[in-house]
Amino acid sequence: MAMNEDLEIILDLAKDSMSNAISHLEKKLLNIRAGKANPNMLTNVFVDYYGTSTPISQTANINTPDGRTLIIQPWDKSMLPEIEKGIEVANLGFNPMNNGENIIINVPVLTEERRRELVKQAKNEVEEAKIAIRNARKEANNEIKKSNEFSEDLKKNSELDIQEITDGSIKKVDIIFNEKQEEIMTL
Image (cartoon, rainbow, N blue to C red; front, side, top):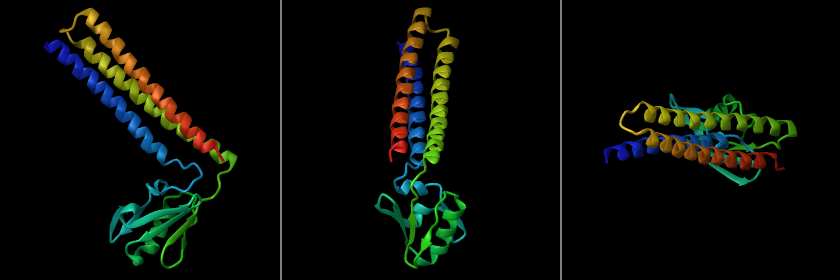
């Protein structure tokens, strides 16, 4: 009975690792803008909040009144210059406008060349996710191979199960990429 439990643990760890790789990919792809204004575009923006480097989302409300505009409303108006500086330092290609109350960012329309660059960037993130998935497969297979508790048949069947989980995860990653690519390339 303990043999099956050990195998289940190995399979569950592989599933978790692959699932984490997919979740990480989804978060990374949120940062790749597809032409529409989205508060997630500012995820990597940090501001000097009274001497502490703080994510912009913890210093202000970020709204998108339409597909082309981001409005940042700081909770403390004295933070406007710091937020503006943080956006410029993040080098996102935005030109923030400070009106004394809010910071307004007009998100520029993406050129065809820029869209292709973003697809390439997304492809790199996808490849990293696939590598993480394959590494999880390799680790699980190594755990099974090095164990003397399992019969050869059980080892072979487990490797097939792991490959099935891997194939499903890779397929999920490909679907996520295709959706992101379509989102980026759609005007």
